[in-house]
Image (cartoon, rainbow, N blue to C red):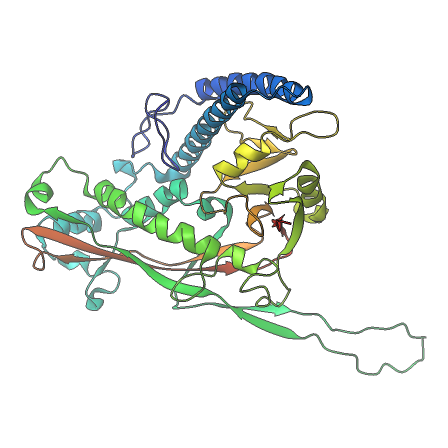
Length: 416
């Protein structure tokens, strides 16, 4: 099995071009995944039986762990393929016949290659030293981030035109009462409001290319620059959306959990934490408690988020009837489930360790919002690093918890 980086599909299993031109063979992946999980169940059950007899076998334990790792890789490949197909269906393929403003796009490409500034480039904010990217190019970056940025798949994403955003919350307090037909109606209490701000920052990348590369008419410059920028943007965003401190970056969702740095920030309180049930470990009871701690009003679109290492741990857990709580994707387009709810692989989530928040469960779209300042800006610099042409690319991004109530966190119990 080839090594796979997060958010990427292993070579040989799926072949998907950046422009969305090929479709992944998800059916074959799902079939392989289910076969691997069947092998895992058989070997893990045998391992448990031997442990009960006092015959722990290190080689069999290693075999179980290797199969478990294969399941993780296959499930990640299925998830990545499903996400790529979803992004393609949303219109992120970047087909040439979908250009909404051909004149402006052509001028933008000319500016990339030669630095030629035409009148049609004067859209957006030219006097700031950059040019607002064409709609098609801007969307290509955003759609590619959907593939590699976990929170952009999970949360609500809202464009903004200003430098910041503040949201008002109704804290209640409006009073009422029962009265008779002729009783006086004195004035009642009035509801109170509180405001909440969100962390903002600017992420950037500064890729470079030689002028000869830019002169090559076969190069798709939009796809090239998107590929250069996406990894840096996704890396910075992925970390900030989960653990960011709000200083020139978004507030991370984990900081709002009880005991976190922003536990007291939201007017509605912190994200409630559920104990895992065992010191430095996860138990079946802990996961079931987490599921039933979430109010039923938020379970329709609830899902788990955890990293692949944690998935390898919970994959071994069973309920009281001996059924595994984790189940693989059964058909193309469906994720793995835990306790009947979808599981999202999130690299930014912590590992299982004492006092760590190793798992989130709830409706992310009702909990967290990513705020995008409309437009990606590019400054073409052919002078600083000759013979390279640098493209200083920036984007302002904010984020934070807009409602902690639809989310719960699994807090790993402290070691004794």
